[in-house]
Image (cartoon, rainbow, N blue to C red; front, side):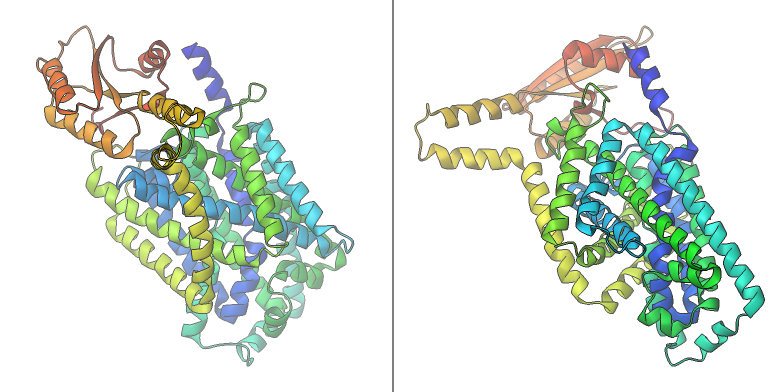
Length: 569
């Protein structure tokens, strides 16, 4: 069973191209709106603002690789904060990630259909947006490998379209020159250098959204692929965004960009340099690649919610997989329903959610930098493929703070809008995170009004008893009383169970730690509310033996944990 499961899992892992395509569609689609918005804010200095963002993103490549190779698990920011702070703080950060994916799904689907409406006047925007969300929900229900096929196709079309647009723009400039760039520089629309770069950088930071998505499904990637996806995304955005922004400023007057083409700059560039056919091609490409960003949102949120459920921050029923395609149908269908209801609540106007997204994305990058610094100090013994210098993490942190400050300074209302959406998400996630406490409070309240043998009271008591009796495993190598007590304190503060099994693997060459049984018995008396058992397993501490132990004791692997290993583990 173990060998078959391992082989099946390895077959489903994503290679470099599909993994890059899934998250690359999100980050490369940013040129469709960031180039115009950045040009409107920074004018002729927009390419410089974009260049500063590219330099910042280069620093984040090593920041992300260090964390995600030291802790190669889904979850992104939640994952690093979980291992360096508390579960409650990590869950609060996860609320921001969930909100970010909801915003990505709704805004990308809405903008994709709006681009299509540019060339199809009778386009049923509301209906087609919901259909688009449903199509990618279906693709995810089929499986991530099949979804990756669609992502690769979209990525190839988008890359080809941008190459055609680049060639058409170069031919146009070679014929008409770059006098338009000089005219824009001397126009009244051009702001001062400092102001232009300050606000232009804040806007251009939206062009790296999606860079963090690969960390949300790192467990679905083959070994070594994660770092390559970050490299490929960085190369793509470094080539596309500055180049397209510069070409557009050489062709289209700055006044026109500010007044008419902030959100449709590439379609306008195609129209001017290639004619109506290229405008149609760019609009169709925009529809497809923004649709691909919807796929990224689904893949990212599935990885995140699975991780939250594994760590008991979300109900475990969300981990259920359907027998037909082995996918997490509850998460996928739930995300579709949330995005669809949000779209209708906003009456199709996703502009407020786009403001929320900018704060969420930049906030997550700030927290990831902080998590990286804490990982260096608290978990320095963990093996990692690379290590980002402290100075680069601090510079990256300061650059993202600059971007967030510019976003807030440009539109003060964004903070209040973010607070409203985040509060709603926090309440919903908080209810699930503290579901046992909520259940106990509800039980006490109802017990004061109902008979003790009432069906509701007995059902709640049965549920609470069942949850408290679910065993949790802690793997213990030695017999340190301090380590055992530290593990029990963690369980008391973060887990709902009151049943702990201390497991020690004894190989043929070693003896059982002499004081292990004595210390376990002592702690069993110190913590009277907890049942603490000792289990000795003959065999080496390997993934196969852990799998067999999980089957024999009927305890899922997500309810097993251990202390951080040493560097020679």
